[in-house]
Every structure is written in structure tokens, then in C-alpha cells.
Length: 582
Ligand code: ATP
Ligand code: MG
Ligand code: MG
Image (tube, rainbow, N blue to C red; front, side, top):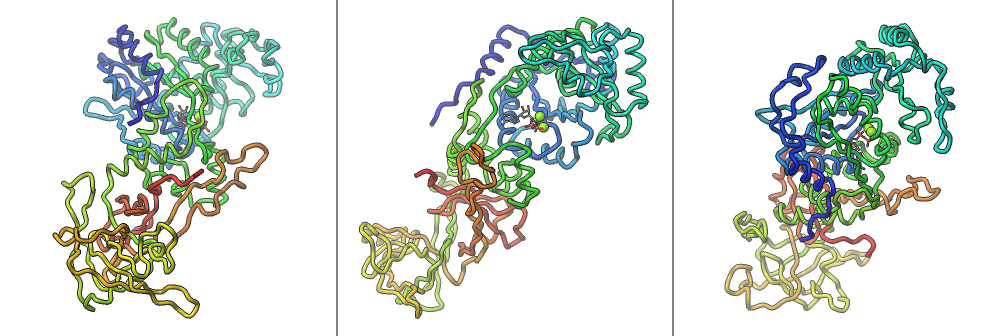
């Protein structure tokens, strides 16, 4: 087994725990929090992390890294991980996304709720508290209402090499700022007419400290607060407050937020000075995001794939979304294993998609029962087997787990075998069926090929064989035959004829859209191939989301959307071996 990769945040957590840094934290219990947030009790959790998605889309494989990291730390160090909807943008958010995120996090095997605590939060529930925090900053001269236009603000912000310029409104009196902020809230002004800014330093080398905006006017209906507010907090203001109110100890985010950390700390320090928050304050840590070959993880590109119908929806099994992965038959265990192997660092890295597939195979090999499927059927007739007769053969459900028992597979005169398991003129080293050769029908009998039948065009339509009556697998006679070929088969009279979708990678280029290319030009035209196949009869009863290894082929799942009772259709999750780049 491959050892888990390094995770520098674990080291930080362990050091903090050893130092007793977060012992006996209390809920802030501040006004404006719903009563269940303000328990006021001693906090028994040693650390608190959070996964804070904005409910404006479906979660993708990248989010799984953040989920596994945050929930994994809480699990491993006796802590708690909150699921928090960062819903501070009224226009973009939707209940559909909230529901899908809840489902996806649960599917990955994590939970935010137990008998003691239910740690599911909405940032929008903290709006009253955030307004008070903004008013406190105004009252202490730490915030002002700016009335410059957006263009003026941008022009006066300066550049990396050039300091910004103070706004002409920067020195408004506290009373004037208080009055204007009240009137902003009362709906007196149009969107963009004024904005509340933190008053820090327009010459700060870090542009994020040049009086960042903290509250803006937005006349929009919010999915949670409706029309109650027409001012909404900026993400950079809201997020640290959310963390502090929830007593988050380690606020973990991706590297692009590194430059925001000074403001995160500035804001929480001001609020703690004023007694609005208690110490110790949360601390932000940044790690590098997950990048994978052969996929795109940008929300804009994913939306384009769906809207332009390059895929069959957000849950298309080829999409790098968690709903897509689930429908494809990928395992939650495989994602957790992948994230352990990828590790957590501050270095940007590109992970080969094969690593993800290997993790899926490894977990599926362990978890999945075996079944028999003939994907490219060719008829085999056993000419010395009585017509109309059949008998029982038994196949183990899992070679590594004898306790899972065996199932019956019926054997009869006419069987389906794979077309590639017969060659009229064998190539060198071919050990399967060709005239004169013997091979074993796995879990059944040894047969000797006597010839084949062809249609007018010369295509083989049936393979003819004779079987060795004393060669049945599991009987003493089985050992009398030494054959090299070992084929799988399904009885024609008993087979379940079904649709199988052979999914492959959505893109055929490792870096879709690299250089000047349009990423759509790198779509793999063969990423979905639907075929009609012959399956062993037990597969007719497969339930949606039941997954199996189809022997010699790969791992397949009964589609959770298109399967009907007694009529499942199957998706290929992954082949048995990696065939890419080989
Ligand atoms: P957008 O900014 O386009 O809305 P997002 O990916 O930032 O998309 P969020 O809902 O804000 O979406 O993300 C929730 C959490 O998931 C954040 O903490 C974010 O840092 C993390 N995350 C997003 N993409 C990745 C990734 N590729 N690898 C690791 N973590 C990620
Ligand atoms: Mg987002
Ligand atoms: Mg985001």
C-alpha cells in the first residue's frame, strides 16, 4: 500500500492540540444568532473546521479535497466540522444547490450532525450580527461610506507598484457615516450609489488592505432572508465573522485567499478589541487546490458543458461533479483514498487522472461482488449437449471473500461468449477457442472447438464445440484437463439482455484547452458508447447504485436514474486496467 502523503495542516493541528491552544472555547453567543447557535455551553470539541460552499452550483472533484480535509481533520482529532452555506450573494443562490451539496457531503461519508450538535449553518442567518459589526466599525472610525463611482474606486486603488489614493469621502464624520449606512439599509439609494469600506491604509503594499469594501447595496431577493435586506456583506467581511461566530479553530481555504488573510486578521482583531468576539480567534490556513488531468474544474466551463448539451446534465457520469461521479459508480471510499494519497501542501500540483482511477479500482476490487457479462456476444453451440436441457454451475461472489458465498449460473447447450474469444485462424500465443483447441468455460466445463458457422458475408455467426462431460469445475474430473484459455459465458436461454454504457474520459487531452485551444475541441468523441449486452440472469435483480465487477471487463453500476425495477441498465465506472497512455 502507498503511504498517505504529507499533510502540513495535520502538523499544525497536532501542535495546537499539544499546546492546548483551543481548550475551553465558548460559543460567541452574540445577538442576532439563532438560539441554537448561542448555546453558551463549554465547547467540548477540540478543534472546529468548516466546509463553506456557496450554494451556486454543483460540487466537483476539487471540492471533495476540501471536504475530505475539513471533515477528515475533525474526525481524526476529536473535533467537529460544520457544513456552512456561504450564502451572501442574493442573486446566484438556489435551494436546488443546497440540496445537492447536502447529498454530496453525506455521500462522501461525512456528517455534521449527531445527538449533541447539528452543525449545519447558513451565513445569511448572521446578517443581523454582521450589520452590528459594521456599525461598530463605523462608530470606532474603522469604516466609512464611500460615494465614489465604481470606476473612481478602481482607479484610486493603485497598483502593485503604486500606492492608492484616498477617497474624497474617507474623512466623513462618524455621524455622517452612521446616517448614510442607516439610509443604505432603509433602501434610499440605488445599487452602487454608496459602499461601506473598512478604513485601513490606501498605501498598504497588500492591495486587499486598501480600504476593502465590506457592505454593498443590492436590491435583490435572497433565498433565505427574502426582501428583508437591500445591503449585503462582501465575502471578505462575512467569512471571518462566520468563522468566529461558529468558533472555528482552523479556517482552511485554497491558496488564492492567502492575500486576504491580513484583512481576515485585521477585522477579527478589531471586533475582539471591542468585545464583540472572544479569543482565541480563528486562524486561516491556505492549501493548494486539486488540479486533475483530463478534466476541467472551473464552474464556468462546467456550466458551458451542461448548457450547450455536450453532456446529459450535471449528473452525467462523465462530469467531474460529485453527482456525476456517484452516478458513474465511483466510490466515496475511492475519493477519500485519493485525497489521502494526494496530501495537502502549498505547492501547486497536477494530479494524473490515472491516480483517481487507481483509487477507484482499488476500493471496488475490495467492495464489489463479481458477475458475468458478455459485452460483444457471439453464440457458442455445444453440439454434444442435449437440447432443451440446462444445469446449475456455481460462481463465487468474491474471490477474496469466501464468506459472500456463491451464486448459481445456469449452463445449457447455447451460450454467449465474447467475440474476441474465438479466432478461426489463431494468432501466435492465442489460447482461447480456435478449431481443434480446448479451453475452459469458467465455473463450467472444458470444451473443444470443432468449427464455426458463417453468414454469406463470411462473418462468424456461431462457434461449435463439444464439451467434456467429466470436466465440470468443482468435480474431481476437472483437474484432468490442462487448458490455458479460461472464458466467461452466459446461457442464451437465461441471459438478461440489457443496455450498458461504456463511459470513458470526457476529454482526450490531458490539459483540455491548453494554449489557445478551445477546451471543447478536446472533448473525447468516444466518451459514451451505449451497447446491448448479454448478462447473467442474477443481474436482472440489481438495485439502482449496486455495483459489480464484470469479470475480465471492469466495474459497472446499475444506473440510479435510468434503471427500472427488474430492468437495470449499467454504467461502466472504470475498466480493470489502465489503458490510457499505454
Ligand atoms: P466559485 O468561486 O466559482 O463559486 P468555488 O470552487 O470557490 O467556486 P465554493 O463554493 O466557494 O466554490 O467552494 C467551497 C470550498 O471548496 C472553498 O473552501 C474552496 O476553497 C474549496 N475548493 C473549491 N475548489 C477546490 C479545488 N479545486 N481544490 C480544493 N478545494 C477547492
Ligand atoms: Mg463558489
Ligand atoms: Mg468561491
